[in-house]
Amino acid sequence: MTSRYLTFYIDGAFVDPVVDRTLDVIDPATEQPFATISLGGQADVDRAVAAAKAAFADFQFTSKQERLALLEALLAVYERRYEDVAQAISREMGSPIARARDSQAYAGLGHLKATIEALRRFDFDETRGTTRVTHEPVGVVGLITPWNWPLNQIMCKVAPAIAAGCTMVLKPSEIAPISGMVFAEIVHEAGIPPGVFNLVNGTGPEVGAALSSHPDIDMVSFTGSTRAGIDVARNAAATVKRVAQELGGKSANIVLPDADLETAVSQGVLACFSNTGQSCDAPTRMLVPAARQAEALEIARRTAETVRVGSPTDVETQIGPLVSDVQFAKVQALIQAGIDEGATLVTGGTGKPAGLETGYYVKPTVFGDVKPGMRIEREEIFGPVLSIIPYATVDEAISIANDTLYGLAAYVQGTDLDEARRVAGRLRAGSIYLNYPDWDLFAPFGGYKQSGNGREYADFGLRDFLEIKGIVGYG
Image 1 (cartoon, rainbow, N blue to C red):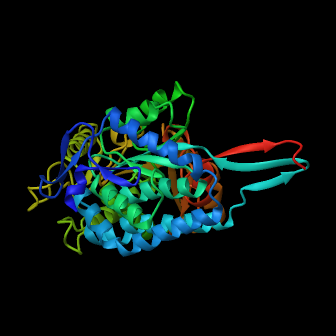
Image 2: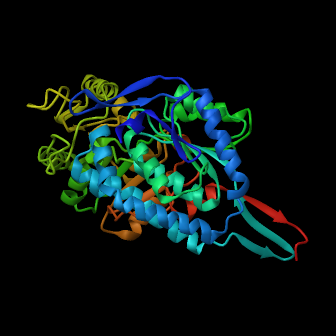
Image 3: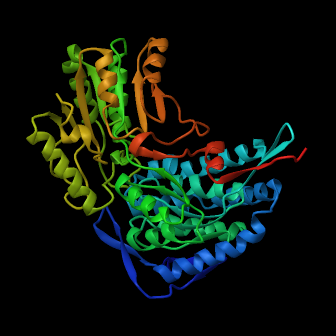
């Protein structure tokens, strides 16, 4: 079905773009093109928005049971096409195939199941005295998703939008768009009504801007960099549309004095390196008691040097390449900045790992003696680079953790759960993780400060796509 990569999905059909412009999709493991997509423009966006607007006239009035049936049909097809999703993600972003199956493709499946469960439980109406409070779909929504967790973010937006009764236009990342095209096929096979879901590929400055500024788009849900999120908000301001944003992060991981240091540090290294460090909520700043920093650095070095970097097709690979040459250059520059600014290079460094000269591979890197204010402590690196920061007191650790433009996530490790909870209560971030818990698909996900606004996952995501209407005197 590769010919479909050159089409868009609009009004229930795969259609050609208005203007023929293409972009090669690069395999980050080989640095060579493996697919070609079409790039959309204003005319394609106008066509997709018109289809969504027309479909909304009826779709907004569908019942909860009707929308549940659609999501369950989507789930059945997704499960059948699961391996296709995993293979697409592995190829387009270099995700190791085992991770593409167990985390990346699974994330889409998990969010769809969680949304179905949340919709079953959700009450769209309540009575307060004589007032009827009802929740209604916000309208036509523009969805802009990133390359680092393609199906996670697509499903975090599409599933609750359908559950709410919205219609939509999706712009996946042009860097990793193939999984989005597979998803459009899944939507089509599932029988989602024409116009409810539409997909237009393209760049942020063109398709993203056209969506976020479009007068017939009622809401934009964006996941990506803080810089691009600011552009989306500016574009949306003229029409006063709702904007939900999940943006960058520079998450702290506080290892408390009573923590099991071996476990806390080794798991923290692996969590930072997970997804090749390309996660907005990665625990990239590890704060350890100054008196135990030397011990922590040795644990981190030993752990990092056991991580297997290699081809995404190898099921034993833990870290694949970064997604692009642009990302590779950015990570290399920040590793060099860490060296230049005087941090201790514990392991890794600039350049590619031995034997991996082709592909955007980086060395898993750990810095120690990192001081607040260094670039590697302030800037989102988006690669497998960990900064270890010593602290004198827990109060100082909390202060350093909160001293960031971001507020997406934070992590706390300690054996005294009451103390860990106390520290969590003082951290300014949308998600706090105590002692590396299991992933909770029903917990809210989103950020404070320049990490965005709004919340995704389960009923929190559903509420983002709903308006609230009060009918006073209803009773």
